Image 1 (cartoon, rainbow, N blue to C red):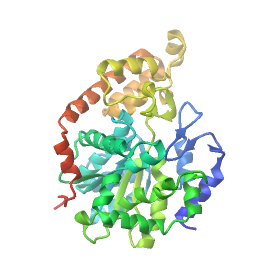
Image 2: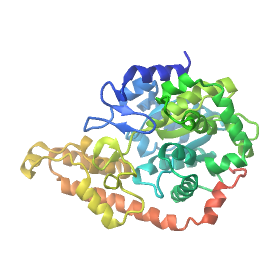
Image 3: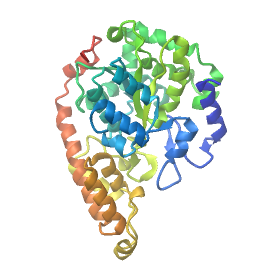
Image 4: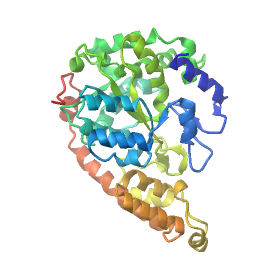
Length: 410
């Protein structure tokens, strides 16, 4: 059975009228859970057929790279993978590979959760010294959000500026939006057609849950997200070489690349490797991921210090108890506390994070105090990003989006 058939069968087996059997629902567009602790990632690994990033793999990662693993990896924020060991073997052998990640622009600004795959991608690029391609799927948002094409292109450019402000190296990074790039690079559209010929209508319905009333653009779109995982999509970077790729992404995007991994060998390319992140929680709690469409659940990169403080204090779901006395006696619950989760993502000091977790669990640290720590951690990160974002002009953006050779490695 191919990987496409396996994922289609898995989706059919665990989904009934849009709700999965244990009340965790994950697809590329929606993530919900009925549990206060959020998605059960061990069950998700089992369903999707991926592998856990365990201590042995982290040890190998550190041995190959000669540096400590990123705290996203150490803390299990990036928790799952497909063939990461193959990428580490390539690094050991001095063989080439590249990175590919992306963003579906649906608003003019990113929120804090959108930074997660780009932060780890920047770190991986610096650690491995490899080229990076970043896809902006403005075509997807036109199809799913009913946006005007012109508006989607504008959002893609604004999102690209937010991404550049994270600190990517223009000499090693190519950013493109589908609605414009496909007209400039025939190789991408040609690979989309090659991929579309390998996947049947029944398979794509099984993988993504498309129905008979869905527009045909949705049915064809998955091939557009798959195409950058084939190095020949970028002949100006890789020539005619068939170069392996590592894709950092949230695990809800995995169905696209399970399809891609089935198709790639049939087209003469290596299977893409992936590392999957957990979801960045909504301020209202881990039952859903942070969404730009819900302002009170979101910490936007355009928020002021006052807005960040007000949102966390007012809306961040608490793992504390009903009264101070009860909290002192029973302690808080870090696993459901959003302020603690914010610290888990963005406080880099492992010892300090553990100190906070223990103090909160024992009731020594109150809800208001842990929210204050979260505010003090998050605010400088957002303010620093805003400063760097102002320096990203249209001219700087055009340099990243110019079709050109990239410089990397020796």
